[in-house]
Image 1 (spheres, one colour):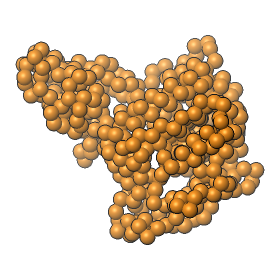
Image 2: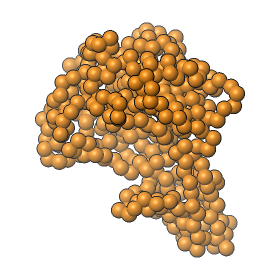
Image 3: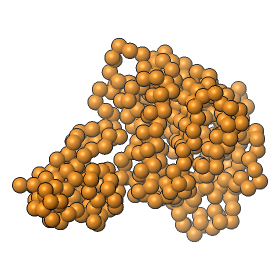
Length: 402
């Protein structure tokens, strides 16, 4: 009798699983389906001579993904129009298996922080008697806090601080004039609970991670995913994207003074895509053809620790490869004494930050009155996300000592 074997059935979101179907008639065509109610994926396989379909070794002949990919069913989940429900793996004639993908791993404790003006959430493995390194986790231009990223990182041996800095109660409403001293307060708060401290952010959070690391020597490791080595313009109020891009303001301040920034540029092509309701590649709003003003470059050479830059070659969100290369150039020019690297995924899009094995089929996403283009192709973005997460965890462990 056919049987579905899944190992493990319950696991953190960033942990891969092995899926094997046994007891099939050799040569039979079998469809393996994954569903979450609102999304579904599938692969059509041919059972081997032993009557086995093994997703870690076999490629589907048809389906929502191609090639041998143990987690292909997970990242290729597509919208169904249905309602969200439990995750279920099924094979006709072999039944179904319920899967649990944990956003807060077992053994990780959660504590909300609402003091000294800070808004965030701490995560840590249950006390093991030893001092663990700490990591501040920053969100991007969407604001809020990235609790899932922080909770999953904590399971790898860190005390993590998912820190909000705008777009939440008790914080500025917009990414405008955010005082960098706020992050100094956050570093001090985390330092009371951990050893060495690192910081990680994606997109605008990647820009911020490099900036905070350059200004606070307590930060001993920085990871910037699809980020920027250049300070860019703030994101202010406005009913639509053109109004937001036209709002001239700094993103960050220090000692009450706004930091110089690279301004947005509304080209004819960008305006046309907005007016015609086409997917908008926001990278068009960043014009570096006349060079980048030096006073907007982040002094990354001041970071007292390692720097990992990660970017995408087909990033439609903004030119993360070019903007990150500015940081790489400064590190090289100043012969940075700590490890540094710039990893580029040529075919990936903007959405590679954060934990892997989530759906990567959405190549567009909603913006203020528009639909943004993320760029890249789903399989490349999915694989880049998985590799970027692995590199991030290993880099932080190496630099901070777990």
